[in-house]
Image (cartoon, rainbow, N blue to C red; front, side, top):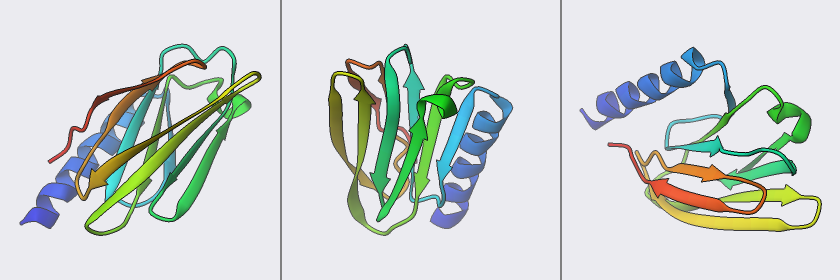
Length: 121
């Protein structure tokens, strides 16, 4: 039953992201899906995600047409993921605890990473 609920949640998130043309999708899996809103992308050179043993990057050029980035990864039990924002003069790194089914919502600029909610389930 839990797998069905997780599958439905993943489908809704992916449908939301795919219906929203301003969402860049990175990673694969359904353990955790991170939604990062780019509230002001001016000055951001690169965004790096790490979770479930995989790295994904979005360059400045990748971000030109997007206002949101989603990062999905698989795993089991408890874990963490990291988001790194690289600008010309600074690098920000945030790490967050997650469990299967979490759907963290974050927002960022070149100067800040803001955690909004865990979402999910």
